[in-house]
Length: 422
Image 1 (spheres, rainbow, N blue to C red):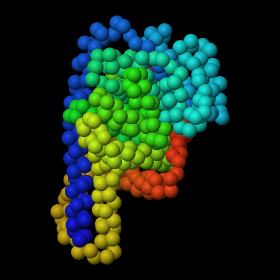
Image 2 (image 1 turned 120 degrees about the horizontal axis):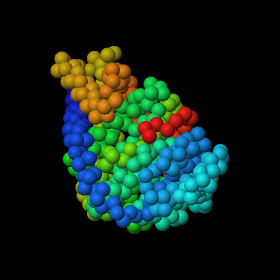
Image 3 (image 1 turned 60 degrees about the horizontal axis):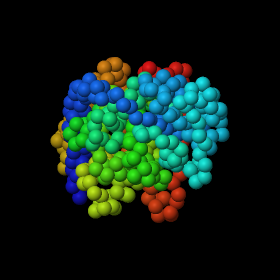
Image 4 (image 1 turned 180 degrees about the vertical axis):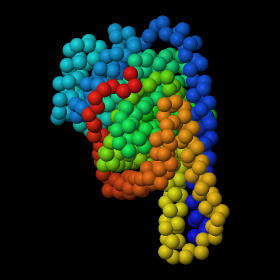
């Protein structure tokens, strides 16, 4: 029995590694080709739509000033730009700082959330802004984001030129990547997500996931969907499935770049990633139980990917680790021998190769120091994710069984001295 479990776990791990190498190849292909359409697309930028930029903000006084400085520099006609800071029940100086920018820039304004949207979470704040705006295209940025000058222009360009795209997704980078050992790991993780999960899936399957920031979507789509799901901790993933179910796809267009702050301490990282994991688990369960109601079956492939990632894959890793540890103290008669050690070694090398290729795309990132972090990442940061997913699944099961309300966690911010990447 132990041998069956071990080889099943090993098969799951290898299946995921090979799939990510396949995605990495697609991501590299997209990197080499995505800019080819820009010259053609720019010719159709004569009649620009109005754009509403939503910035949900709850106690963001540390970062909101840098964010609004970046917003003020955006390359887009200001008479067609409506930047909305959604001050959601803040108890600090967020509202006052944002209001100061609004007084200097007529295209920036501040709104306050009201009942029933007040102080509940990001989805509710976004729904408030949806009701108080009229831009033809909606763009969302988190309050710690400093988009590059052309970011909104490129997002709008993509939507205007690709009629099948219900939403356009840009690339995000880490502004505080060199601050701590943790932010270095997160920076590597972020780059891999951009070029494997986003670019790779788009290249092979025309599938991408709406992130929480740096994306644009048609207003008529959001109104047709009835806004954001206030029960979803991962409101971006949940919205992704519903957009695909309408018959659109979501395009990854890395020309639109924003820089965002990442957690600098383990406590903040744990709380943020737990929310992400629970949110994705919620989405998987919600839509897999509605399998036969989904009109567009393409997104089912992606739901099974999330199911594999947050359930089967981590289950395989956990079983493999447990068997290995138990076998150190008690002979389980595992018939694995040297073959298993070779497979484990090859899996590690494949992991390193995948991550190294992803970092090589961002030319400034493939340094000796980052390569050392890649080698350490497999044994440290990746293992932390295993514990986190187990903990998240426990919390989500507990919430469902006890009928608890969803509690939103707002990521703690850290002060930054300058706007990166601009």
